[in-house]
Image (cartoon, rainbow, N blue to C red; front, side, top):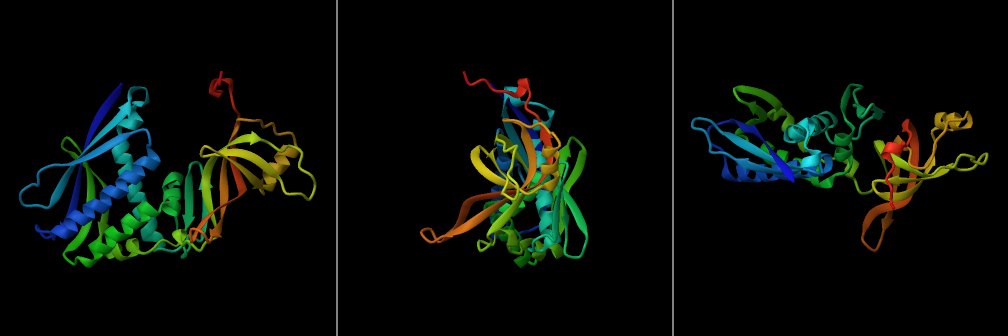
Length: 300
């Protein structure tokens, strides 16, 4: 069985009471593409439909109704608010793009499910880890945002956009972007440069498949893991973790690690593109969660 939840949001274009039809349709197309990809990445077990209400007289505000469907055993208060959280992720993506202006971060450090991103001028912003990984890796999301804000920037009658959550008579702004930010948000993302040979995923979850508890001196320390449902072999370069293992830290098959994982790429001439080279480095281990009897899955 499944359960449904509805939420109401307003998407408004600041400016005149009239808007170019091409701008409206194309902008909403790119917005929906971004929303759908974010929802699939952040809440893959949900199904969300977005409906548009009738336009209100004297304004240019789109009333958006989100209908979220969950399997009954996954239906809880956090899941009820999935549409608002996806839109919050959208706002975070725009904040990242506005701050970085298409450039790579000077430094990225994982902290308790978030990442602290250091900008070129030394300023820092803290964003959700999953959202930052989408910013780094999702060409679909990034291209949709770039095309959307390039379109808005070229339409001089659009002074800004705003998304508001509506609960009865209460309204809460989720994002409010002025025209002066359109150009920065529309710039190409350097993380998606296909000539790069490596990429770092922060606060990634891996499961230990085969630990190497007795590494040979001056040899590469390779462990086997399960990452995103596939087997990988990764070199561990976190000296603190190595010291902890040597001092008797107990780990075993099925234990979960939260790590910063470097993925390496190689150029494949057959397809004229960069693909994963099956080489991985774990450069930092943030936490270890031992497998308990309650989390073990019986296969027979």
